[in-house]
Amino acid sequence: MNIAARAAKLGDRVLSYIAIILMVTMLSYGGYSLWDTYVTMTGAFLSKGFLKYKPDLNNPEETRLSLQELLAINPDTRGWITLDGTHIDYPMVQGEDDMEYVNKDATGEFALSGAIFLSAENKPDYSDSYMLTYGHHVENGAMYGDVMEFLKEDYFEKNQSGHLFLPNGRSRKLEVFAVIECDAYDRMIYSVDDKKGQIMNLVNYLEEHSTHFRDIGMKESDQVMALSTCVSLETNGRAVVMVRVDP
Image (cartoon, rainbow, N blue to C red; front, top):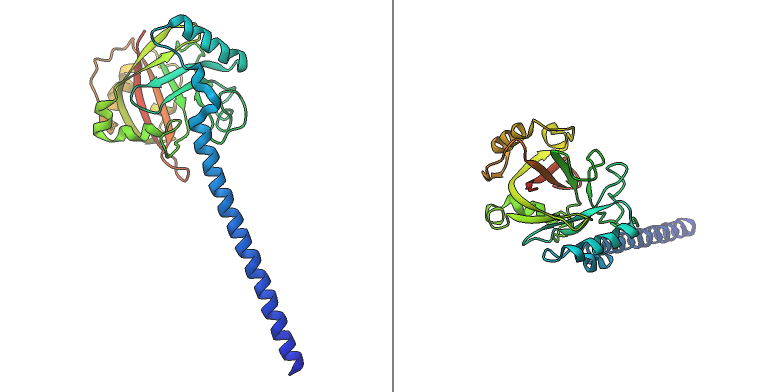
């Protein structure tokens, strides 16, 4: 009986230790998850002081100097994108491939929130007929989180404009005309091969398949930029805002 009792006590003690280890592991994982979320959110919004480089629409020379400062920090800088009335207000970079800036910020340093970046398949001077850009879907609206908001009709109707600022001080007006829900394998959206002479095919596709579409009088000679983000981390679903880039 004494042996059985001692065995039972030992078994209880082992189970208690296992339970404590499991609890500590779960608490540690929960703490890490909260830290991870905090770093992602604050990194995306604070942007390491990037706002001091924000272009001034009414001051092209100041814009040029600000973006030249960013270029000196990171030669991958391609400009700055802003959509009026949204949180989309960030430097634009371009990596050697489309994975480089998934977990790097616009200075090139590690950041869970990544950066807003132009596809590596596009020309860096924004001269392509069709340009594809990416940004993380951050729940609080940071990075390209507000792309999801355009799926709401009132938001789509309210927020229609923006600007693309270039390192030479120029600014180009952006006009929102569509938002589409698709998947990552939609070649009409994610093929960035030269679409010169094919823009109206894209526009017709968007008119047919978009969640919301606005007729702004698109022409074959127009340039289109896509702002793409993930619907969730678990699926291949994507939400994409389409804008016309005026000369």
